[in-house]
Length: 106
Image (cartoon, rainbow, N blue to C red; front, side, top):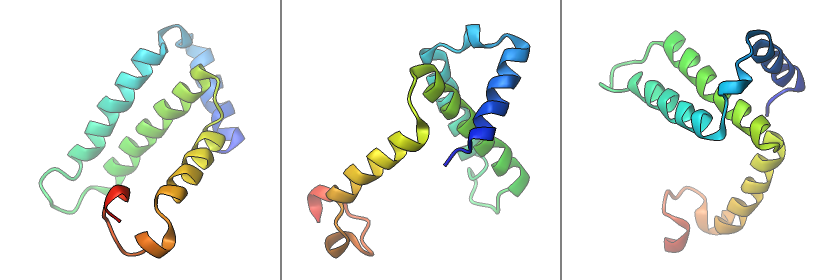
């Protein structure tokens, strides 16, 4: 989960540049999608990906996710744990272990 110091450093970085004005939920959601596509591009042709590029793109995705959570006023740790609990109910271990089937097909 995101460390408080990571969120603080990110907030400071954005504030120093006065970029929060551009960080609407819509723009941040678009940026997440764009950066996720760039992450996927690292694996596009099935060759071994460049680890440095993967790390950079993953960092970009996570950065925009943290910025969106902040803008929406939600705690990223909390919403991930809440979603995990809901997903845990959909995929009980005794049915889902070792299976990639969707919950409605277990």
